[in-house]
Each structure stands twice: as structure tokens, then as C-alpha cells.
Picture (spheres, rainbow, N blue to C red):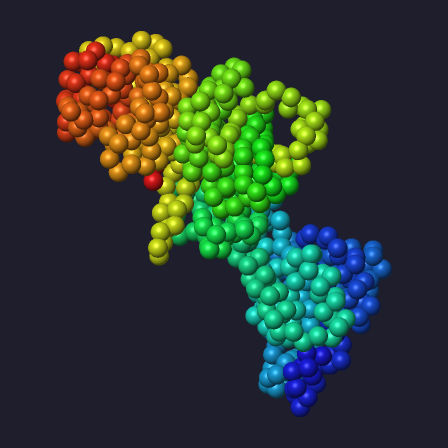
Length: 537
């Protein structure tokens, strides 16, 4: 017994001294038969509840039902089964404390050495579709978390297991008669983490049920689950890992975190990402995906998902440096790369539609051509997602920037109204510029990005970079800015007009907006105000 291992040989014997007891109560019964038979083979007496007891008996395991221990029937439609001193006393009693064991003996309570519990499938229930509030409440486990927390607190004497993947290591530990406290602590950590994640789902669900119009709760927990350790962070000297977010709001949300890899080894080559009927292709470095690869892939996925027409996006360092929409998706690829072929090298190429040859047969051909071809599948995400960003000592939270050209009004501010094709170009440029790091300028024409300038503290410098990339094709094109132009004359607006831009789209809001209007009127350029800023830091 644990008390003997702890050296408490002078403590009074409990009523069930010498009997090793395991309490098992499971909703997910994966691996239960092997666990029960393994514990029985090791000399454990199995105590269990309801359906778990029936499953164990069907597997040939001798079971004592909880009510035989508590001498109290299950009641309140199963809400009260294990909430009893005969159970929790046997779990929480410290084997190295004489007065604990004396109290158990006085009340005829035996100790538990192993507690194996998992919880009602609340997460699955509330995310499976329409579920009424009352059903959600009934799927909140009470007894299970209480058992888990009790056993985890007293992990020095009680082994607690919440994951069926740990059953083999539990049996091996018991068979080896080990006394590894670190093993016990890791199981206890996992138990508390399991309950914390469960409670966070209940909390999130209840908040949304009670506060349907409020985006930001006074406090909340983000349940993260490790998906992989990365080879390094932004730089080789920084360690990094990739976590998936298990929040209810992200169930079926799609995105890079839920991408399924169908093919590809960790080496250099073209890599394909598919979501719904949409396909991404990207180039990655020699090893497995890194911190930066995930950031770039996410930027590419977010940008290409904005477009309804078949579109190709090229991303480098999270900035789209090439975007084109064409019915011929390979022509879209050619034009997207053309916008900045130097930056496209080593970047990520994303498609939002299937590409030629991407059929079951074509997929096999692609797999056969290269072992380095990485093929991933993901889905679009919906609107209204919450965006979180860490700062020292806290987090910033905001709604995602979901606005599209169809959601806003492009207000004519100049004398000349844009032609239909020019307005279309302005909308395309505006949709692109929201994904470019501020200060951001995009020049576009005929559903094709011609050049972009990003990340400059001076907006005029971003504009000059965009024109440098667009070259002569900028004449007659549209220009979009993520924020207003603070100056017009002898500055960015006039420079754009003199370079042959046909239409400018910007949010407006500067105290010198009239200068921008007058400047565009002088050069016969259409000026559109969107009333919407697209800062991206």
C-alpha cells in the first residue's frame, strides 16, 4: 500500500487494509476492458459506476458498484453517485497522517490507490449542432471533476488518470511497483489541465448563452493544446511550439491550425494546401514548418480567402506581394508572381480554387512526382472571430477585420467619377491593401496587383516602393491606401496623380482632405473615400 511505501507503518490500519482499490468512472470507454483486466490481474479491487460497471462486467472483470460502498443509491437522475464521504474520504486521506487513517477506520472507509475518470462529453454535445440550454446544463459533469481534483490533490498517494492513452503506462508503473513521484505529478498536472479545459468550455458556452450581444467577457480562458514543437521561432536561437485553440468559437472554423496534411516530407519543394473546394500551394524551406512558415501560411490563407473569384496570392514575410484573380487560375498565378518576382522566390503561393490536375488521379501523380510535395487541407473561416495578440503583461483582443467592398460605400469626392472598370480596380486594390502591413499602398488594375509598398513609417515611401514595382503599368491603374493621406500637394497624392493613377481609394478623415480633393481635381483623377481604415501592425 501507498502508506507502507511512504514509511507510515505505525499508522492504524483501515478497515480495508491490504486491499488495493481502483475507482473507475468513464464516459469515453476506450481501452476500458484492457485497463480493467490489467488492474484485476495486479490484484486491484475495482469500484465503478453505472455504464462503466456494466462494460467492465461484460469484459469479465469483477466489479463492486459504488452504491455497495456508499450504502446509498444513485439519485437525482444520476446527478449524485460518487459525492459521498466513503468515496472522497478514501481518495483524499493522506497515508502519512495517522489521524487521517484513524478517521477512515472509525467510519469503515477504505483507501483508493487509483482513480480513472473522464467527463461527460460536454464539448462534443454543445458543438454538435442545435442543443437546447437545458440539455447543455445536463451535460455539465459535477461528480467527475470532483473525483479528478480530489485524486490529483492527493497524487502522492493516489494515481489519477484522465486519458486512455495513459492506461498502458499506468499498468506498467503499477506492475513495476515504482514510487516515481514525478510520474504521479505529471498525471496530476494532466488531470487539473483536463478539468481546467473542461471548465473553460462550460464557461465560454454559458457566457454566450447569457450575453449574446457582448463580445468581450470580463475574463475568459483560452484552452490551448500542443500540436507540435517547432524547429525554432522567428530566429534559430528562439525555441517555439505550435498550439491549437480548443475554444468553442473555433470549432469547424478552419484555418492553418486545423489543416490536414495529406502528403509531403519535411524538405524543400512546392507545397499544396486545400480547404473545402479551395487549394493553396506554397514553397517552404528544407525542414519541417517553422514559426515563420506558419505565420506566412496564415497570412496567405487569410488573404486568398477574401476573394470570391478564382485567385492566387503570393506572400512573403506575411505581406501579399502578388495578387491576381482570373478564371484561368494558372494565369492568375503567372500574374501574381509577375507583380514582384524577386519577392515571390521562396514565398508562399496560395490558391482559393482547385488547380488543373487536382483530382484523385492528379493527386496521385503529384505525390509520385515529388516526395517533398506537401499537401494540406483546411477550410475557410467564418466572420466575427475574436483576434488575440500578446503584449508584455497582457493581451489585446479585437474583432477580426471582416469588411469587404460590398460592406462599404465608395464615396466620390472628386469632380470626375470613376468608370466602372476603375471602380472595380479600386475595390480590388482596397481588398488587397487590408492585408498589407502599414503604412500600406497597393496599385492594381484589371483584378491584378501591380505593386505594393508596405511597412514604411512614411506613407510616401510606401507609395514610391509600390510605383517602383508597378512601373509603367501604373498608368490608368487604381491606388488604395490603408489610411488617409496627411498631405496632398508636393506629397503622396500629387505624386500619385503625376504618375498617371486613374483613381485613388482612401479612408479620408484628414484635416487636409480638401487638399487631396483639389489635387485630384487638378489632375483629373477620381478620388474615393471609403470611411474605413485598414491599419495592420
